[in-house]
Image (cartoon, rainbow, N blue to C red; front, side):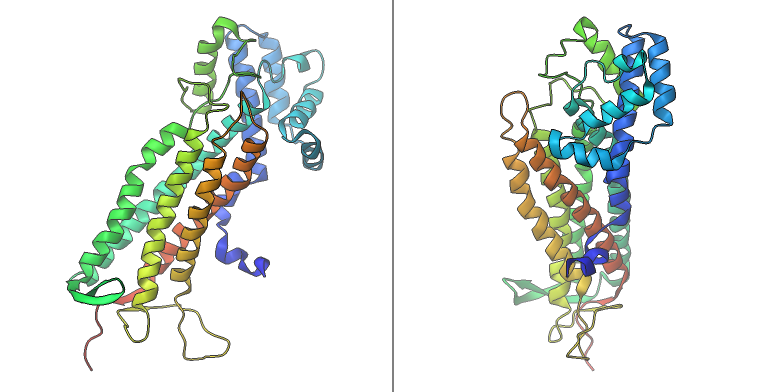
Length: 350
């Protein structure tokens, strides 16, 4: 059954930004930036950095071997480095991955990919705010029954309910900048976070490498401090929760006996031809609940033992991509759902 749900529950645009190809490309860009920055700081020769850059830009790793090695190593970077070193060749292969550890590469590559993801989310959130403004301009003065605890309360206007929807989206959008700044950062601290191979050049090196990748330099070692990832998960759930609230309201408004909204493109039933199911609204509720559940997993991954965890880090890899995809998918459905609205407000008397 799950295969049939792919188009309903997957954001292909988002997947292209965080999938296998994007991850490999980002990790290679981190390795090349590392070589260039290390050379600029005088820790390897310019000839070595040039050889790595030349070889790296035309390098296509063997994905099957990466997958097989990850089964043994638990992380893709060791095999990626082995292949890149073989591609660079002697004598400059020794300068590949200088002073770095796998987590430096994976975490920094994630930041590189998240930059494009945040741009996508920013554009989609702005589009939703515009759509809500248009609905308010068109239907805002229409009467609507206000409801508390799912029971009729007192009359309100459509604009009153839309203002609640918009406020939740607007607040999520307003905090995106903080989430972006905390996650678009370089990780470079070596095997146990002490940067021992870089010595007193580590500060210059971090800033040089971060500039090449358009990232910031953190004021702490992020290897085992994963609060930024937990906070990212919180934000993703905040976004899908806001969209789920919209979906839940629309699903209730679309009930036949209430009929406070009309939608185009609703779904049908195999047994009841008269039904018009608000599928996108329902899916927004589903996606909100999925992300809410996953937040607890990212908080479990805060328990990152000692200087690096294998289990907690792997848990992040399992959860975060799904939450990103869920958020992207929810934003797509929300925009389409709002565009399908043909009427909001109490149905005029016959």
